[in-house]
Image (cartoon, rainbow, N blue to C red; front, top):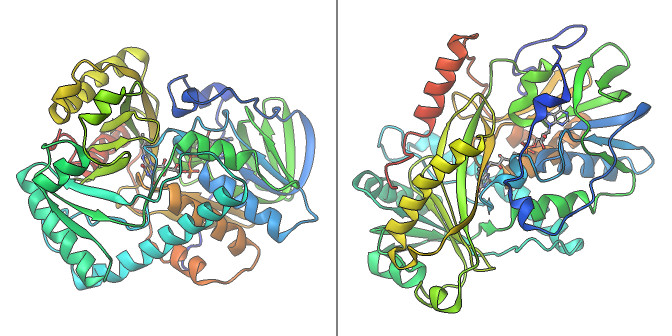
Length: 456
Ligand SMILES: Cc1cc2nc3c(=O)[nH]c(=O)nc-3n(C[C@H](O)[C@H](O)[C@H](O)COP(=O)(O)OP(=O)(O)OC[C@H]3O[C@@H](n4cnc5c(N)ncnc54)[C@H](O)[C@@H]3O)c2cc1C
């Protein structure tokens, strides 16, 4: 059955993560740019809940919200290992995608068979984006939400070809777009670095940590959120029992939305990898510095290479650039490595904006994202009453929201075209055991993000 048991099966007690130290974080995220927020108390003692969601990124938050709507008389428990905003959902580049762009691994134009896949992926993206739009508007979430669309840009010869393929794909899918040459891009973005690009309306730019904090702080009343509450083990006997450092939860239905960290709980072991990405943000630019840029007061550009540079001018006047993606054992980088990656960001920044060479970065950050070897996403039932959704290969803000919502509905016997779209993702390819896993993971990240560096 599609969507059922995508990965490894488990019986009895699931594999355990040893301690909450396995869920480390640092103080270099977008959350650090926001006013301090008081985290919800950690879970302590014994609890019983009909529904429990593990992981409060966009996927877990949307799943918990939908469960609460479907079951207004039940308590939904949402357990987050870190503080809200410290996972990938609070550390991404803030592009909430509507139209995924075409990556031509073999430098081939899109095949007819791929068009249906792209339509399905875009339906999921758009469903998630609309859900986010409704929630941001209903709860007045201040997350710098801008309906700007994105510029898909080409800076080297290979991406020139990819630009042509993207244009063909957009034409065939009848998606509105505008092609720009170097001069037009320079006029808008204030850099002559790109020789061509395509603006696709529909996508939204936002401050990712502000989004997830706003979503967490506006959850329905029947959701109990506990932060600093890492689930350390799961027993799948009835009732399902979760062990935490200072507590225990018994639950009837369990939703796992832990992205690349699912294998720490014995779920989907060897089907996903954590890839570590890094970026830097400048201080707020002054009036003259902003005037030296293009005509737009905020914008976002995405490399036409998979994993290539994403660059933004934020609404508060900062330039934000992310341009590395590599395998680091599914961990954030330490401060020393971050300093070395900052040099890579600096070089790319000065190539694009030589007139801003004196503008310092205010901070650099890393974040870990789940990827699968064949680029698929995960959605479905893992065991009786245990469900998982996640691993969005670097594009999960809107899609994770759609998957989380659909997972809640699917587990409660819902039927919808969104559920069908989520179930239709192809199964993930298996990865070898350790130590080959590390080599395989390194290689997978390299090949999935082979465009990284080409357009620095
Ligand atoms: C640097 C970077 C840039 C990116 N840029 C973009 C972008 O511009 N646009 C885009 O669409 N996507 C982007 N992504 C990808 C996007 O951020 C993710 O796909 C998306 O946030 C995944 O959401 P999620 O809720 O599934 O996972 P996460 O946000 O990773 O949330 C999972 C949560 O589960 C918690 N957790 C894990 N294990 C446990 C446990 N045992 N107990 C309790 N809690 C647990 C974690 O602490 C975490 O908060 C980027 C990712 C990175 C790292």
